[in-house]
Image (cartoon, rainbow, N blue to C red):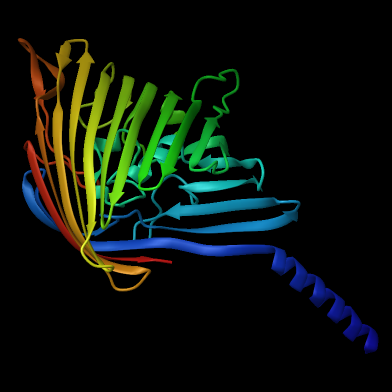
Length: 377
């Protein structure tokens, strides 16, 4: 009996010691709202939508102290549809699934399914990104991935320490294709600098045959895809104002909206201004405007689609984790998106509005308004 008690006590001591040096945290964000859209394929609609403002997801993150300022870390994260509980994407852990080492003196290295440097560094400065979290404000088709539409598979990533406000990092996504090292690979680099009220960032992403590397959630895919941009925001009292520019180019577009028929090259420049004003510690107003200048070239010639996207929202915090919001978005599309053959030659394909997270309009204009509840844990 004494031996049993001693053995139990020793094992308990080891268990307490192991628990003290490691941790696992459950976290996530749940967003659900009622959305009115004036035009979806020619008709207005009332929708119970998941993720109109913020992506809905849950995850597990953990760390184990290995001593000497070194930790083993991991993250498993899944995006899903709150309406019916189904996963968003092609796998269970469709957002993040990685393991790595974090050093207090050298930075962090991780391997697995991860987001690129555009998401890490530029996204927090965008109205559609982690800084403000309003998916309705995303640039058309989330062409620059500031809304974190897709992660990169088979990736190794490095994140630096914070050097007096300066941070940098990079990612390389392996193709994992036998005999085709470059086919399906991705790589990106980025950096940010924060000093007082000013934050600036820049990033670059390149993908070869992105459909093999990015997840099926990607709305645009091409044989060669490049995205790069810069951004900045400035805090003055209760107000924050930001500017973001990104350039996305897709050579030999293979997946996209209904008008993407292949053998097309697409260029998009996004010019965004955004702002947040805190009326009280609990109540904030958010707004943004993005002008997207596009160019489509195909076998028939060149066309110049353009999009004007505006968003205005109010957010009230019921607690540190729970808030309610009222948001509206307007998009106007102009120009054409390529050409289609006809018996007598070819005809322009008219550009139509398509606010992010919503099906396309049948006209150049689309308006959406939503009221919803968001809870973070």
